[in-house]
Length: 483
Ligand SMILES: *Cc1c(COP(=O)(O)O)cnc(C)c1O
Image 1 (tube, rainbow, N blue to C red):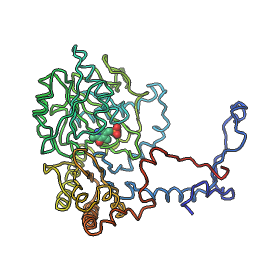
Image 2: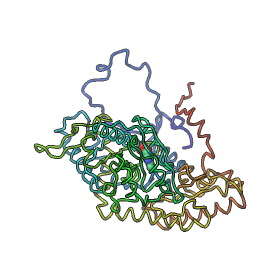
Image 3: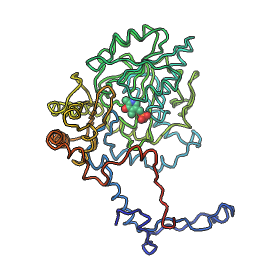
Image 4: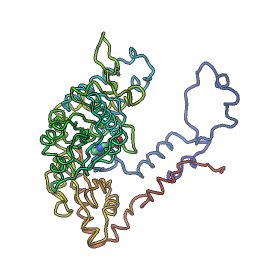
C-alpha cells in the first residue's frame, strides 16, 4: 500500500496526530484580508504518524543513496557525511538565525565562519578567503572576476583563459561568463598538461590558466612548478579548481606550489549531502596580492566583535548576506572532529582505496592512462562497445542490479566510454571487494551474456527512464481525484 501516493493513503479516520494548541494571540481571520482567505480547506492528505513514516521510508528505499549502498561517483566526492555534522547544523541556535539580524546578535555564527576561514587557509596554504560563493561554479566565477580586476588594476586587459581538455564543464562556462575567451589546452599521453602546447598558447593577451589538480583523471600534475613558471613569467595567474580536495588534505597545500586562487567545494570534500543539486558552498581562497579583490569575508575581532567586511577593491557581493551558512557549519564541525591528522588520514585512505580498485580491475577494464593516480581512477569501456556492443551506460545500469550506484560515466571527455570511480575514504575493504566482484562479473556477462547487461537494470523499481524526456517534461504535481 505504500507504493501509492500519500494522497491515496489519506483517510480522515486515521487522523490520530496531536498538534499543540494554537496559542497565537490573534486569529487568522484577524490578520488576513478577506480576499486572501481560502474558500475551501486546503486539500492535504490525512495519515497517521506511523503511516507517514512508512510511506517516506518506503519511497527512500526505491532510490539509491549513500545510506543504502556504495556510491562511487568520481570527481563529485559522494562521501559519507557524518551524522554529527547534521546534528550540530540542526541546533535551534543555528536554524533560528535570520540573515537580517544585527551582527551583534549573530556573533556565534560569525565566529564559526571566522574559524572556518582560518582552518581552510591552514589546509590550503593561502592568505585570504571568502566563504560567500554558494557553489563550485560560483567560486570559479568569483575567481575569474578577481583575475580580471587584478589585471585591470595593473592596466592590463587580457582576454584569454587557458583550460585543459580534461576540465570540468563549469570551468569554461565561468571563464566565459566573466568575459574571457577560452582556449583549450591539450593533455599529453600521460594525461597531464602538454607543456609545449602551454608554452605556445601562453602569450601577453592570456590572463591565466584554470587547472584541476589532481586533474579529472585523478592524476597529479607533476609539472606544476614548470607550469607556474611559464604562466607567471608571462604575467598570467593560475587558478586551481579545488572542487574535490579529497586527495590533498594534509598532504599538499595548493597555495604553496604555485597556485594563485583556489575554490573549494565545502559540499564535496568537507561533507555536506549534495545529491540532487544543492545547496552548496564554494569558498574562494587567494594569495596575498589578490586579497584586496575578494568578495566579503568575516573580519576577526575588531573592537571585540566579528563582522562581515569588503576589502577596498572587492569584486563585490556575489550572493545575499553571508552565503549558505548551514553548509559552513557542517564543514566547520567536520574539520573540528577530524582534526589535522584525521584529515590527512582521510586523504591517504581515499587514495589507497582508489588505487586498490584500480589494481584489482586493471586486468579487466582498460586503463587509458597508466600514470599514477590519486583519489579516483578512470577506466574506458570502449573494448566492450566495440566487441560486444555493450556500452559504458549498460555497465553502469547493470551495477544497480548488484546494489551499487554507477560511477561517473562519459566524463572526462578525453576518455571514450569513460568510467570514473572514486570510492572515498570511508568505505571498508569488504565493500570495495564486493564492488570489484560485481565489476568482474559484469565484465564476464558483457562477453558471454551481453543481453543481460543491455537489458539491465531489472531489480530497480524503474528500469531505464528516458532522462531527456524527464528533464524536458518534468511534472511532479499531484492533481488529486477531482481532476
Ligand atoms: C563539482 C565540480 C565543479 C562544480 O561544482 P558545483 O558546486 O557543482 O558548481 C567544478 N569542478 C569540478 C572538478 C567538480 O568536480
